[in-house]
Length: 561
View 1 (cartoon, rainbow, N blue to C red):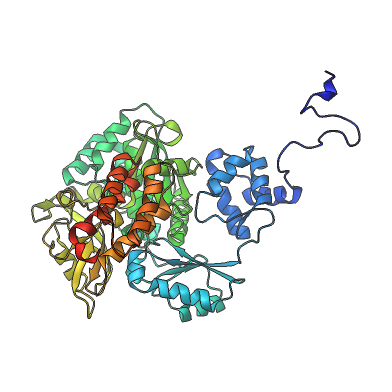
View 2: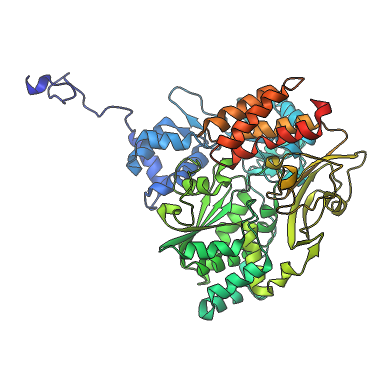
């Protein structure tokens, strides 16, 4: 066979063969636009999500031309770019021939607290009253502002206690940027002794002594897992470096807003605690993974990290602030690490655990924001700040995010042995005209408990005998005007939307559960079998915990189903 007769061989001469490689070709203008946006930043693979944010922010969507140009610039395949861009809810991928979304997007929170406050009616009123060619109205998962429900996000501006009139005023004023609250800056924090304890540790500290303090305090992981915080340090240090620290700031569990509460007021208490933990494990770099739903927090942290660098407290680039893109699953630590590496946020199979094989395959210490807040306080004030507080046989303090049918929703710092009765009392009692019926003790994953079970301390290990757990202490209170079955359906719809799709029991199980729960009368034996399959066979905690609202509604509120 002659050379020019072989398939796939480029040929010379007019009209013969291909003049370009196979596949979509990049456009010079799109490539230039992408290069301008990326600027001098290194084209590292792990920065892919950050680069996608730059394009989305600038143009309001991710066009096929820009995605192809980004693939060319980063020397990646289009498949790699597309699979990441299409995984995250905050990226709008627009293919050739498709109409880009309007310049303005409104995301209406549909979490349980917002649903109780009328979010569904608000969303419908906005869709009916606004021009869809100018404004896109979407439902969205929890935005971490359950204390001011109903909530929506106009561009990047959150509107609390949202109404149609408030939205119209904001649109007229072009108020689409986040409102930055007053908070304690670096100079103010240092005036009150901030960073002295860190500098003392760096000069002459003993990491094991600090670990012993943390262990003596009884501090456990406050992202939901509850693992003793100090023990993690030894596990990570036992592995050869380089080592990293990763902060899980993806506070996506509906009903949870404690981390945002602290970061919008006292970010440096967290930052100093983070640097202490990084020092303890000799971390070469600290990554902060912060959810995209917290634009004000992202701005505060970016500014204060720059201030720390300018003050010489950290080297430039030591703290790497990463922005999530709307994926609840990234709250799972290995999925978060995948996202930090610029990939789809899909949980890893374990073992190995992240303390051994974490970011870029290196030992990684993972902590929650509030956990590090307490690490700093323990270092400065001693372990007794937690260990000296006792109630109902429990030790320590908990930050409860309280919302729903209470008089004053908010974050309440209470003894860890507090019951739902104590928490409702701290929140000013039930809202006027409402009688206590049920409560969610720790986010949707914890299910629902009836008001009759009001004497259980809401802490680690106390709720498991009842088929529940405290998780991130996201307490949502329901009243006699609410139906438990509706609340359970809201929770399962959330899990259906947020399943990463990696494993069949979770992906298909959540979808089937939602369909079965919409029936006027639940098929309880079938739902029970489905729950067992999900609990036993799902890869990560999402699928394993998703059945809890179903099981507990069948157990405690059988009259409704």
